[in-house]
Length: 112
Length: 113
Image (tube, rainbow over all chains, first blue to last red; front, side):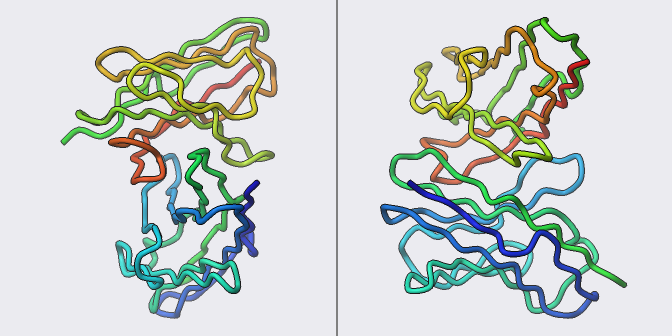
């Protein structure tokens, strides 16, 4: 069995300040982990993925995430938020058996 | 290259009717998966097709079905629509499997009245 918990339903930051979106997971097997972003009225776009290579994963638009097995976490960070980062973010776990499980999403609000 | 195309973008149907949604994957992608997104349940996996075969299935009733054609285009069908089927239905394509990189379409917004 697998599950994903996104610890915050909403995160509010000021433009230019760091972003931290938290994700904890559980999986019976070594999973692949992903972060996706969804802008209003759009489909999901892959930000980054972890597939058991480097534990620090760099993605698009300045985002990165660190896989911490001991903490079963895969938190998403960005050093400096931009107004265009305002969107819904989803953490996803996908084990070898394929069926992906999505977190409930974190809405990132960026204030000018 | 062209992205994942879903048609139609919006649909309004009446309870008890059936509906068919279409998804055209990125050229060369053989895996197509479908998801339901609602405010209450979030994003849930429906099923995945690979080379015209259903390879994985989520926990949805049999009213939800799909198929994939030889050109990898996929359709999803929902029969005997219920109010609770109102949702954004997303399709994603990938080269081999969704635990590689998946590319999502913009979705079909289905409203059941």
